Length: 341
Image (cartoon, rainbow, N blue to C red; front, side, top):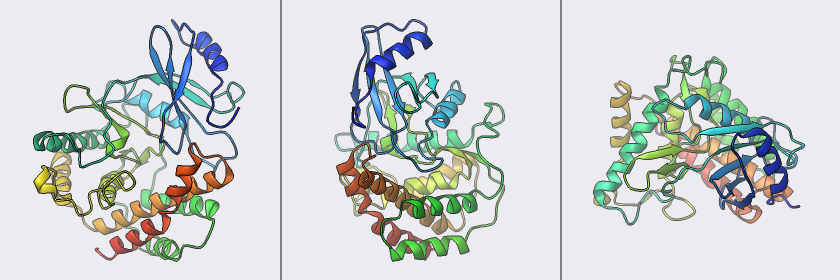
């Protein structure tokens, strides 16, 4: 059985023992695309489920934390943050070869291109406003009340993150990327003082990690919580702005060079201002650092994807190798952002 296959017999047996009311037979279909944790649609006569697992093989320490995904989404049930319902976590690697969890299948629309072709200008603006609203909701969660106070360490989030992703990058480094080395040095020397903001952060908050209601412009579920932690909210905000600096189309999924006003899409400044208003923040100083950090982190993530593709552990090896080729571009963009305060 290769890395992309799933032992449906073992999964069905475990679900029958664990989930009240489960009845087979069960079939599985792998979702295309995702590079991190392989995800499968499970179908039974009565209902559909989704299974998300760690990839098989040797993994970087702390990567592919499906148990953390399960925990945070379970904690968010009943909050203003829309998430899928969690059913059960299996931490016994002997069942299918790696840890996995089962969640509900949320029906909805997924947009992977922020130009939102096919929508009206009014609906495009509403999609961006929904993203803004839900981001503010994530950062407004009472982490003590939902049991997530210990979900991330105390202290300077960016200092911790720069250190963590530098180690991850070095562990998966396959060749020297001079701009990445320069960016790592710049970030380490320019970390802002801790301002005391400590919230839940998603870690990979972007349009294609959301499902929208089938019939209206409303976020039905935020997906892919693997990188979530307790940290600094500006990292999530800058992550969205970073994505929009990318070229438009299937690969970049960005808005570079797009006439946003003509499409009803807010500018970076308008989106940041709307977020600040929702969060009661006057303004954000040194946004260039947060943007540079996000370019660096994405470059480190893509380097890990490339290494897994070369090692044969990637969910989609061909696409993984292609994505890894973008590491120098993200490094260069991070250095450019660093020069804008």
